Image (cartoon, rainbow, N blue to C red; front, side, top):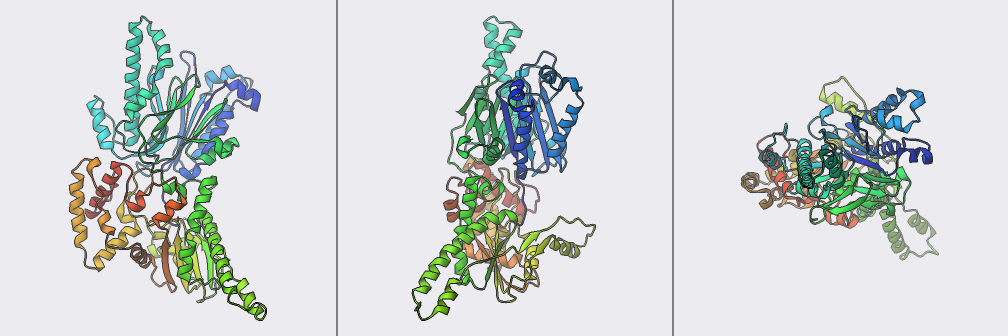
Length: 630
């Protein structure tokens, strides 16, 4: 993705099912869990580099002993800061006690059995320490404490805020972090109170009731009430102070969640490959948490997956497959290759099957897998073309023609290499763009000047800014006759509101292209009419709204919009012919058949809140408001 975008976030959770001494005896360290958590977080660092947090819950502490611990960092080196901090804290323990389990459990804050990690990309709310997960809701009753972290965005925060007010609360802000913490916390309190009443009536003492509540508290009841009216995408993990834990996934399966269980550990992470690598597992040993389901981990160590919300049509985020998730997952790797392979024929059509005068490459590095698939597809077509050509040749009497046909092959080259991030005091835009242009090194001598076409694979085109300000200028220095940018993703047309930082319509190259086409063709009235309709839709409840922003794109074909995008991102003075080829939505679904969430391409949102966000984003665009629409 030449235009980098962010998304929230990555999570990791480990529940040790044995005493710490078990891991000391088997693996030689009390820090087996902490070490594995660090592995899980490191392998998901792609999901968040603006901050990180770690939380620990200890089981069965003595009265007065600390049983909750948290460490967070909002620096650019947050992950290393956290674990270096843990190492420094351990070094402060007297040497004679470093191998004493009882001492560590009592005095070292991070010697616990429930371990929670979070990696954050700050799409909203800034990167101050207050915005870093996990969040804590503390109470003197163990079973009322809640530690919460997740990969989530909630679209109906206003509705949730009003619900909490009706319950008698006064939330300190309207962020989804605070609202979810307080909403779940409220029903934890109610569940505690319900059980207290039952056990009190049975004659138990208050101290006995406290222990009974720890055993009997129902996370299923709590979660069913807490998530009843939540609209959004989420993979949310909560730890209760006494040792119960839950992982909750949205009913459309928008955000990813995977887990592994054996007799030693329960492990949860956003990405399957992270678990597979950290624990040296086969992919089939790792489960995907079902949409609308919760993984319930009791203080006893018992685990079950329970349905909390009736699942809706599965709309797992396809951008996870195209770009966000690490590509070493075997399914994601295969899907990205297929995304590239499916573009081979459209590319060859644009080239007129000319492989002799074409060079293939990719940018950025994350597009490499799709590029390999593209080349595989080109080879398939090349072999067919060779067979057809050879069938027309007198092989015995025209060996030179045979030799020429057999030499046809795609020319693969490493054209662009990202060198370093360059910082500058220069504020002049032209000079800054020139400097940014040198972030990439280019390979000279592999493109025949004014003869070759350069085909470049990219993950997707969001804003097109980096293409216009640097990449196309750099490629043009190689003097190709033509440049074709091939996007393994379809055109991004609508905002995301489930965790990806794509919230403003005016940022999208496809949207700007459609607006430009409307203006050029004297159809400006479509904009005003859509604005009026969007305002009318916003007067309805979210569940009744239609996405009227589709009207902006309706008059044009995909090819017309692609052509206009190419025209708009083409830098001034560029000499080569320039075209953009986008993946089709239909072919995206062929490549990623199990992850059909495509709302940013089609406008077909999986929840009512998404449709509402699209309409609101258009109103904000028309009114010149720069804020995000949720």
